[in-house]
Length: 308
Image (cartoon, rainbow, N blue to C red; front, side, top):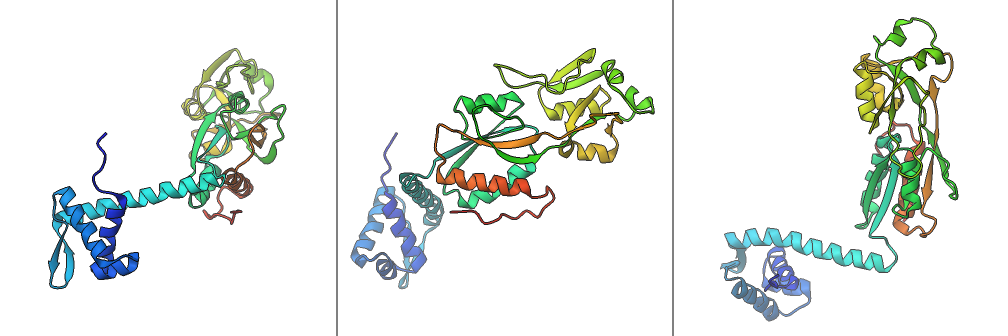
């Protein structure tokens, strides 16, 4: 790759000349001599082969080409400063990245709010978010691929922070044979019908959570796909209420009148990688996740104050 002929310091000098209205003013702002500033800009123009400034009376005015290059240079200088800041934060123990794995059944709205509040405090720290289903979360955490994990299971060997529960509702299309019974539904009624279940993304010990041993079972890869199938009249399923609120209101899904077990409310837990100490950025994100998990889903989109 060809090395740039113009340095960041030269771009900063040109910006100072334009922003402060002249060479003398730029020299004062940069704590340099006016001759040094003039030489730097003249050398830039020579290296680029393009006139950047023209003198109009006593004032230096950008040429058309100079205006275009100056706008591009501002982003370049800004990115360089951000890179230097990130290196400084990393030297102080600030993480370059936080890896989060979450069960797909956990409400996305809460995560979005937590991550939105984290953004202005992140100091350049990236977030790598990964969705898994059921035991897939546990596998990712135990493999050391995640710093934080949100799961609806108690993960052996880890101390999880208890979070809110997620309500799963047994549903089917209003015209489904189960609803046509027009009575309370029991276990035997369900056994004769098609059940839609979500594939466990774990590879080592996948679980058939929620499967009742129905004669027919269709396994799909996501909760969204399951909701689409069931709202189209294909089978029944237990689905998170927050995911199907619209379908319930519009009438394409209807809760099944089960004599027992019509709803399930698993509690979710927040886990951290026990083999890696929590860095400052991860600790801030943990607090935000906990705060927004405790807030109602329809709460105002505002970030509480977190530790810095």
